[in-house]
Length: 411
Image (cartoon, rainbow, N blue to C red; front, side):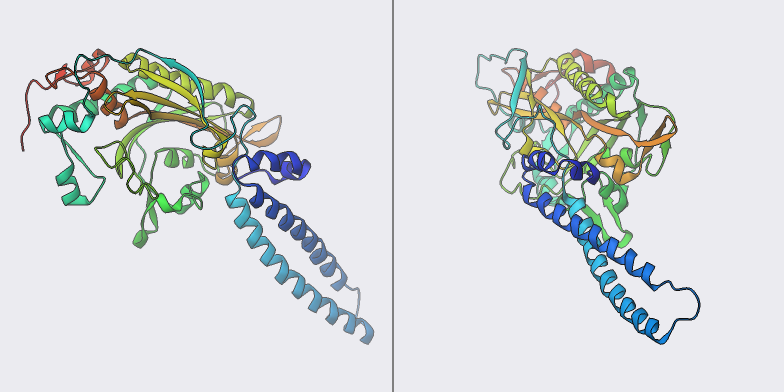
């Protein structure tokens, strides 16, 4: 959550920043409620002080005490209502965007650079589903039969390639000094709230009501909550986690229904960093550099975009997306992202460090290393005329076949 003291210091400037995320009216109400809450708090403290008398009260004092008691009850009732509303608003007010984030919504991003030549085929490029179904590598029909829409089976050499991608990404990020983690994928409500997915993104989270647990949509959640309510002794702390992830994809009806670009269950290698506040901008660039290094080693053409303020999630002040070129779709599509969430999550999760004898909130950052979107980008970019796929050499040592398509899997 935001530091409301910063909002009080310069409400106009702070509100202008939040308006870029579409939260102008929300923060305006928060300021109104916060002012009323502080006034009610002072009134309650004054009424409590007036109730304190020395010795046995006179009849007149008894009447005054009764009036003060009634006044205090009314004030405390109003204060409780204001406290509830104030917390509701604080829970929903997003982190203000950084100054170098462009204005606008989903289509108003800034392209920072484009790297790599788009492949030129002497034949009509096919998308990943056409390529995979020709060899029996992806089965969407049985995925729907067993689990419903947006679930898929991966089979044969494609399954080996996907697993190699995750092992490859883990190895490369560990080389950069990140500690590997295999986290739980079921978490308590506090972890979802602490990372900012509750209450604003609750519609996209699968819940296990009987056990009061939730399936994570990213291992950012359990890794961020790993140090909840702790004072960290040494910074930075850098982790890289592998997990299966689950998302409802609410609001995505009719969008990316073909193949496995947008599914309810997927696997991901996720980077996560805790650092001192002054280091978070540099750490953000560092995470982006790792992501670019992976995509470059795989040989995928891509571009880096600076996501617009209106398209940022509540915790992020800035986010970079890497979009790979998908020849079958003839457009760039997001395959990784990295976000600086400053102290938004650490305030909710109560994660601090000590400096000069004082406790401060850490900054947290997250970044995708690899998901299966890289897999389908490989299929489309390295396809051959006969429908086979040349696999990047970087993946061979991690168990990937050197070429897909030499042997078919029919089920």
